[in-house]
Image (cartoon, rainbow, N blue to C red):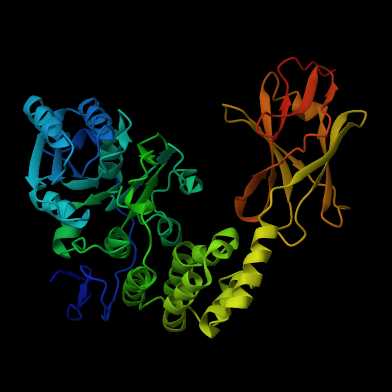
Length: 491
């Protein structure tokens, strides 16, 4: 049985289990945050700094892309090692691994019988690691060529315990990219808790000293069980967003673990385990604990009760999710849920506790309506501007502005929405003077809502494009709204 220990401040240590999704109880006293010293990079120590640990099971042909990206790192090979644990692959990935290990002295391969999940091979790799830090990679992803060097330099300079590098989705993978908008030396816990995936640089002693282990059973969120403890025990967690560090893939064959079917009660058991870890390690800051738990439920729980997803469930399947989450909500979510959730989501928590399937269907229908994309009604010329009129769901969030984002670039224009908008219809003027600063380029047009949410404006086929001064507002082949400024000549 695996345990980790809390940071101590004179009280006796308590142990927290992170291996299996069982209830955790601890009396925790966290040390206050302190400013860590910054180091001169010329003082960088020699020897292995990063151990890249990779569990592998039937990952061809993606595996070779990852191995190539690790071979091509611009960090000297004496400073990093690659530990690959082949979990009984039945494709020819094992042979490929041996070839790479033969030609790279810093590559180590372990072949073992299939364990059925990623936890055991990660633990095996962790036990063999010699680096100051461990970076957990998945066998179907790739790293940017400068990734290890940049992470090493930043982690050393700022004495980081856990480093969250910028992830880039590929192959249709959907992740929260807004998390990587900027580098943060001291990242808020409520931000980093949005990513409980294992692709992080973690100080090895943090794992060793607290005996943190991945569950080796076939349970959901086994990585989140470890990461939640790591975040809360670390003295410094940073986000590094200055480079495309890690390309995370949605596999075309549908074999990502995250794409496999969910078993409701087992899944909720794992969510409860993470919530208990949060509760125990934020005992000195109950508000933080409630905030993190509410955020966890928004991401890992409410998604099963939202809009089309919930409405597509057969009644028996939907009621399984209701039965599984009802006791969890009663035990772990804050009582005054309206402080942490929207009115619609707070109502869902009450309906889940009450087992009210019909009310949850109604609320999901409201979600579906509110999530619709804004739609262009017409575009026109107004002396010195393009005027856009568009609709946005009345039951949805209120539009705050219209954005014109440079396609393939970083420039962005923001235009205020006419305050006289009513009944779900809104108007905005894209002034020629502002647009001239974006030319020559193509701009994609979005509506900005609260909390940095943006939605692309849809264009019905019968809405005509508008042209003036060499610029045109038009419908793309995918039915979205854009503006072509390549030939624009504004006076």
